[in-house]
Length: 239
Image (cartoon, rainbow, N blue to C red):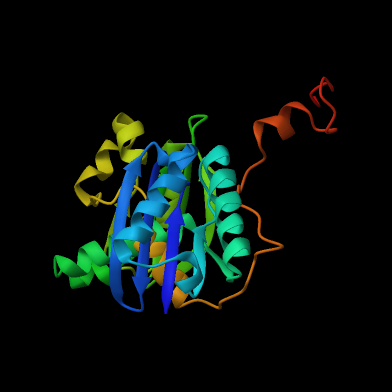
């Protein structure tokens, strides 16, 4: 099964084409997560994989949470490609994709005790907040959340249970280095979701086609919704 997968939840776009377990082409491009460069990157990856859009079996996209602008660009691009190629569009959590990358890193390093533990994916949410999700064997533990980075440790402890180890991944460590410094020793290299992770998670998922109904997963209200709760430009902010 050939799948084009990509994620634009962060400034770095992860793009890949897989054929079942085989990676045909993959790249991460800084800045492509919020610009027209995304289409250029997708075209380059498909050319490298020697696959046209009509030869794909499905398109997979990271639905968030993450940058509102990036997620809208990613979802619109995914819908456009899927519609033009008449292929199904599948969506996965961007945090789940990041956790998949982290689990693969642990397996490659043969840290099997850690693989059986909890993997916490943490992305910069801007506004002095982070998006976070806890996973164990690619299954979500609790719910994905958004909160101040200082709340991360207590939240993870509330979900850890009998987990033999806790590992972290994501770009939040680079943005909130001072606050998250106590977790640095357990922070893994993956910083942003890869296209491979998005494609592989979608391949093993429920294969629900969201071409006409799919929307990004923002988790929190947008700034426009907060500033203009009545949906009218210039409306007063609610007290």
